Length: 149
Image (cartoon, rainbow, N blue to C red; front, side, top):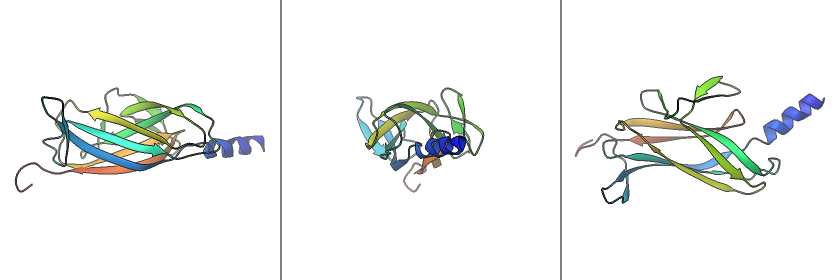
């Protein structure tokens, strides 16, 4: 019974991400950012979301794993680090984020993904994990550059 209860608390304390926003930005030589929908112009992808309030999760530092998958189906990763999910097994992550979570509060989170290669046209899928569970997902489509792209 104790194990069942611990499992329920474990699942209930898993955070949830919402209001997932994904933007692509070009950066000028002066450092000015401008949002773009064109793959050729994109210098970085900014991922923003909020962690919804959770009355079970204790306050403190929480580790979130963000997985960004490119149009080719490969995970964009700077570290080649992996983590274990509860449903999909071991996955490569793009970024591990430490978030100072406050119990019962909504916490905004964002980070930039600068890519060394050029971005290509297609769908970029962003998945957010906490406690081994996927807690949010979003997609950003980058279009082909050019006049008629």
